[in-house]
Image 1 (cartoon, rainbow, N blue to C red):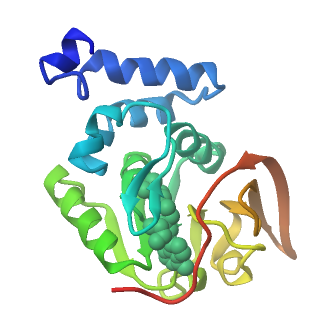
Image 2 (cartoon, rainbow, N blue to C red):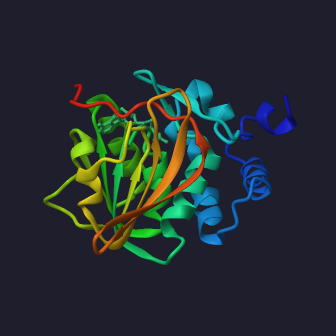
Length: 221
Ligand code: SAH
């Protein structure tokens, strides 16, 4: 146990967070806006108190209901891939989960809509955003595979649970030139893909191996 954690300030201390940023840099995250958003987002708020001391480790952690808060590296990487081309106005996220990825994105885009199929997780995330005073997030309790056709088209879409293939309903809710970042695959391990909407369909880039929970259909209270 370090002196910091012994004093109970380890999990939130600037030094602990800075170590995570150094690690993300080493792993190849370059975008300063993204690194800053990660630096200022208190990840310990998004996990159970019992796990708060591990919140700034670069690892996924359980959030209940068989789901996980994504690893900071993957949050940073997906965010970087989404905003690389410049500032985005509206973004759709599928899979709110803890709300951590949503909170990071809320610092970088004008407005973010986020869909979660498990009601309890959505309500928890809503309380967290309220306590942090975040105002540019709109949450929906529904099946995210269908997107939010009434609110689109979006400049960007991020999916944080893995479908087996590219969901065309979501591609159709991207503006032309808009980008969607998502894991694709039916196995334990999937491939991270970036889809760019074009005038006559879409282009896709296959990026790296990742591990996500599956995208499920229907909703749960
Ligand atoms: N970005 C989140 C990741 C949570 S894990 C975080 O860092 O906390 C993925 C989430 O996607 C889970 O909460 C799961 O319930 C949700 N999910 C799975 N299928 C979904 C669907 N069809 N629509 C909406 N959310 C879905």
